Length: 179
Image (cartoon, rainbow, N blue to C red; front, side, top):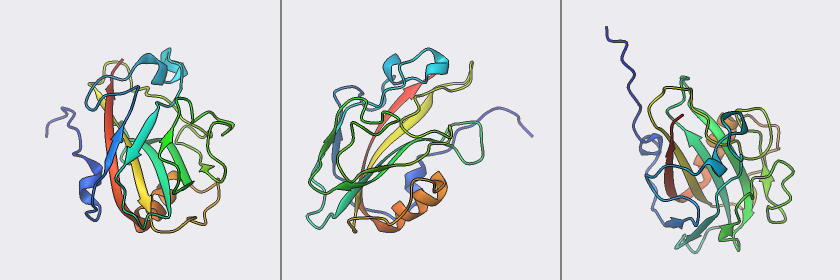
């Protein structure tokens, strides 16, 4: 039995297939290293979420959810860095640091959930020292209802279950980071 570390594939490939649309960022490029601004404070970073913009979602989109997930975390369940639900369908971008803990940079009606850090807001990249690159999947989910009807204290895995059940399309941009 080998103890060499292997990484899981794209976790979204195991979910029901959905159409895609476009997501871009002024702050991150797909497959490229995240700036320290988007790294966790415990790793010397700024803990700020990146700017995100999206277009081309289905016309019947009723709301959006935005998530950031690290499937490469040394856990059996990955690591949720950010979850925002109930973004109005009229919203097509979030500014840098929209994931501030107090939610003050989010649009009216959006609900920010606790991350796996146990706090509200965006928790930046912070893989263990010496690990290879971790992938950070920033995903925009086009949702078929205006509200998922969940509360801010729901665990990330349960929130993801609800998001997946109502996703009609998704777009992703992936950044990487290692210490």
